[in-house]
Each structure stands twice: as C-alpha cells, then as structure tokens.
Image (cartoon, rainbow, N blue to C red; front, side, top):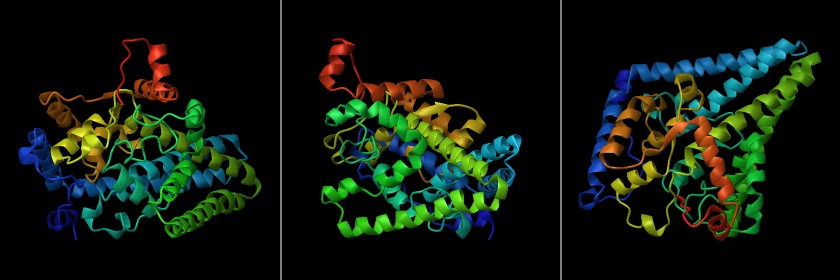
Length: 381
C-alpha cells in the first residue's frame, strides 16, 4: 500500500479531546480556524511525510551504528570524540523527533507497524505505555492546569503562584539543575505516579505493575549501554563506557532544556481548575496557545529538538506530523495576531533565561517575591 493511499483511506484521527460547544463560545471562531488548519494538513499528508520519517529513522540508525563502532576503538581519542558525538546525536534524534512524536500517533496514518504508536519502544528509560499515559493523556489534555497537569513542575518544582509554597522549594534551583543530566531517570520515576498512590488516585497494585515494567526496561537499557557494548569494545571498554555515559548525559541535558524552554518561560500562563470548568474546544485551543512557548532557530535546530521548538503548534496539534509544524507556524502566529492573542517565541538563550527566572522566582514564597521585586511587580502564572 502506498503512503498516498494510506493517507487517503485511513480514518482521520480525532482532535485531542476538549468539551464541545463552540457555537456558544466567544473563542468559537478561533476553534473553527484552527480546526480548518488541522484538516488541511491531514488532507495533505502523503509520500513526502512518509519519506521524511523513514529518512530520519535511517539517519538515526546510521549515526548510532557509527557511534558504536567508533567507541569500540575509543582508546584512540579522536574516535572517542567522534563516537560520543554521533551516539549523542543519535539518541537525541531517537528521543525527540522519533520516539516522542511516533508515540503521539503522528505517523499512525501510514499503517506501517514499524512506525506506529502501538509498537514503537523508544531508547529511553520510561516504558512507552507509561509515557503515553502521563504525557499524551494527562499533560496534553490539561496543559498547565494547576492540580491537573502533573508536568507543571513534575510534582517537585513550583512553577506557579497557584501551587502551594513549601520550604523545600527554596532548593528547587539546585535540584532543577541536577535533574538535567539525569532527566530520563527523573522522568521514569515521575511516570510511576507515586504521588497518585499517596493521594489514593492510583492503586498499589497498579503502581507495583508499573514499577516492574520500569525495572525491566531499566535492566535492558543498562545492559545494552553499560555492559554489552563496553564488553564488545574489548581493550576500549572503559572509554566506550564513559562515551556512552556522556552521550546519554548530553541527550538528557538537551531534552531537559528544550522541554523546559517550551513550557516554563515567564510569559507562559498557568490556569486554575476553576478556569477550565466547562471548557469549550475554542477555550482549549486558547489555553494551549497561552500555555506554551516556541523557540526560534534553523532547520537543524528544529530537527534536533524534535520540532518541540514549535511547542505552541505541537500543543495545538499533537498528532500532526512534526515536520509540518514549521510550515503552519506562520499561519498560527497570524491567527493569534488577528484574535489579539499572545504568541510567545524567542531564541533559545532568551527562553532559557526566562525559564530560570521562573524557577528562581517561585522558589520563594509569593510575599517574599513581591517584597524583593517591588510594588509594581507582575507575573504570569
């Protein structure tokens, strides 16, 4: 079956669920315009999209193979540098542009079991099913809703004045920085939802099952990266091990940076549960726009970010092919301008500085921030 035929014959994926009722919604026109944009992209999917994702998969696998081979002779320093760089790039591509987006179902329309959300298991510590539950279903449905979106600070960071302050938050700049190089481990533990067990929203039995799944995945990942390939490297075992550790660390820091800069710059809004009661589809779209930030850069930057540099477009349309985000971003920005909506975007350095400003600001009690910032201080979220 050709990609064109599959695209035409496959059922159109449903938009991310949001309450109906745009007819009576002041944001109804926004919903109609964005729904139309989404429908246009779905109708245009075809051979070029299929070629793109298969090319990225081939490039990623080539980089990983090259990196592993170079690290097998990494007693030679140039081989270590080249192998570590290739492996770090391969792991970044696999996590960001492949794993994350494939698990969103962005390529399910192709009908290819090799590139399908139900069969893909990524090179990341968190099992795919656990990720799809906490990320696809919880985070994307309740983006930046205090008390509903667990990704708003990942249960350990205070990123909004609507979240209660505790003394431990004074140390959040430290543990936010320490989280970056071990990000996949932090996410894996977070996806277990231990807080949901304590709050009796998740059974101990379900937690034990998830923990077992994580331990099995962690064993496979550790055996592959830190035992099998170093042993195959023979005399280069130690530098191969160090190269793999470095590649994983670089991938983690990059993923942490892109994700935090797309969700937590200071201009990005957060929302109370009361604000989203009875939320219409148009209001859901509005929340995705106001609760996200884009990061400006070139094509290679967008590829290595998994196109999450287009976080606004991704939150609006998480199941559209990631390569289409750059194409539709100017139209989304124009729609925002015509509706008088903010479109938060900026270069990486600016979003990174703004994100850290938010981490620092909410490490303090709100009264302390108001005192140190002065009587005219304002904040979003």
